[in-house]
Amino acid sequence: MGEVGGRAGQLRSSGLRHGWTTGACATAATKAAYRALLTGVFPDPVEITLPKGQRPGFALAAEELAGGPGGRWATAGVVKDAGDDPDVTHGALVRSTVRAGEPGAGVVFRAGPGVGTVTKAGLPLPVGEPAINPVPRQMIRDAVAEVAAECGGSGDVLVEVSIDHGEELARSTWNPRLGILGGLSVLGTTGIVVPYSCSAWIDSIRRGVDVARAAGRTHVAGCTGSTSEKVAAAVHGLPEDALLDMGDFAGAVLKYLKRHPVPRLTIAGGFAKLSKLAAGHLDLHSARSQVDQGYLAGLARTGGADEELTAAVAAANTGLEAIQLCRAAGVPLGDLVAEAARATALGVLVGSPVAVDVICIDRAGTVVGRAQPLGP
Image (cartoon, rainbow, N blue to C red):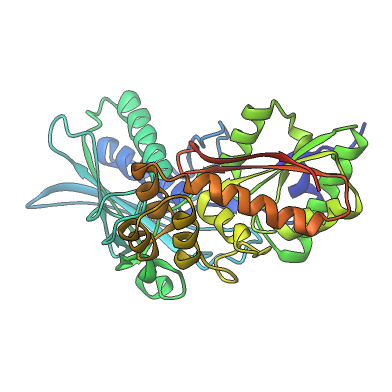
């Protein structure tokens, strides 16, 4: 039996242990707290459903059930285990406090101590909202609905997520620059943290290329994460062993394919990350490269942006805000970034028979830019 490819195969070959996202921990804490609010008993461990169907269990590190003038409330806490990933939130205690909400309101989110609040445009949440990203919000809503169905609850709850020492931890992240103030963000798209130890993960990328070549694949996709992986697979009909989880290591994919070519490479990723590749960065990690709004403004100008729009892009808070501004004005910034990213890739692959196309997506997985296949 041959080696397994794709993300699962890469993780296995890396020898690294996966972990759980802050969003998964917040979901488990919320589910336990809501069940305790309805039944008086905290489930421990508490099992949740992740977006891809896995059902992990989480041990509770804190639980409290009490009442006061504002009514009864329950708090549960889960210690985040990020596996072998050097995550700033590894070991942090993620708490969720659940109270009855207004009838018909559904799940209402609040930022507790250590969870930030959005204060600038350009993020996937409106200004004033707790920094709990869309996928964790849906995971929490699903968990609340599951408990409500099992225990006879209405599902109308106020959920306050907090992270012990989160405000202090957030100082070592990009949150303050992005206008997320007061603490950390609750993140995650799959519920699982894939560890990116540089040397181990780069080696797993190489093994992923080897598996694809051994299987006779003529087309592989280097993807920055699970959402872009799903888009690349859908657009091109690629099997799992043709999907390379490159994470932030675009250079590792390109350099290995230069020596061990496959006829076609698709690069798929979030617009902001691929704007870094477009600008010539091969390491897309936020600690080692940043979105350059000045560079994006220059691209927008070449795409027909007037002075006002160019200035707005230069002043944008995030890459997401820049692409939204340009899309509203009919300026193809996504395509321009994709084309520039392809040019960077071909510059690394020069002399190797690999054709390259690029797909840029937004956080929801919508394609916002394409560059069609082009050979070296």
